[in-house]
Image (cartoon, rainbow, N blue to C red; front, side, top):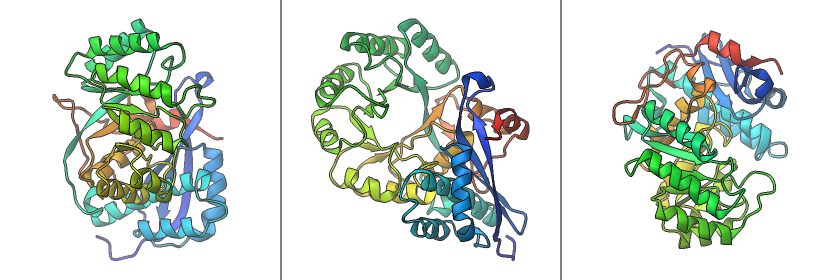
Length: 371
């Protein structure tokens, strides 16, 4: 451990495309690098475009320059509290998320400890990742699931695509195809993606669909309703025999409180790269624990985001799964040592300092964008 107290000197960003085929891709994620005066560099990730993150950093710069880089919770709270009018969700909170993750990474490097231990202690050394996949027509869906199984996954979440957008009969055909493909032992989750613009369904559809999903042993029903319909979520949770989950569009711990305190979900799903970082997600996780709700972080982002999720779930007693987009250049191509599942489909939580990962610069460069 160094005797000097590291202070923030600069924050840099790298916008990432979701694919090397740029004509078919877009910048949805931004890596954040927090530099210090002692040479330590922390890495974070934001589920936001580079242009928006850069704009937020201009606003935040007078607040973070010169700050102590090994006090992530205090510095992040200062940024939240000092941007009351401009922040409270959206771009500013997303940018603070990346900064917060990077500061935890610096604290871990400084103390030579994994973040999970610094957040109070590790409840587990490995966790089950679920392959996060998009629904497709039955033939392609079968191929997608078989490929994920070949990569070692034992749990699979299917989302968006045609589900909920054609007919109840077609929805059941897709779920039946998925269950036949992965077998009875494979865990299946369904996410129709009701946060998509102009979602056409309401509570009656969700109740009917939950019943169908239960008959196929689906573990949870995610984002079944528009993201502001908290009363309908409570009704769905009371009626459904499977877990009901939501929360990926929410930011700041204050937004999660009514969902947990009024019993709207069985599983809460904050995204550490947009909710305010690890500091906020940790508080949400413990509030969820107090209300007997599981935490499954939304992780449709980068390898840095996945590493942060792994540290988070290591430090919470109420975690069972972690989301893993597969295959994804944003994960596989930017990590020096890619994550590997064991023979039981479990993922070891890194125990190195900070996030416990090293980045692959050439992989990042291939996906980087200047705008």
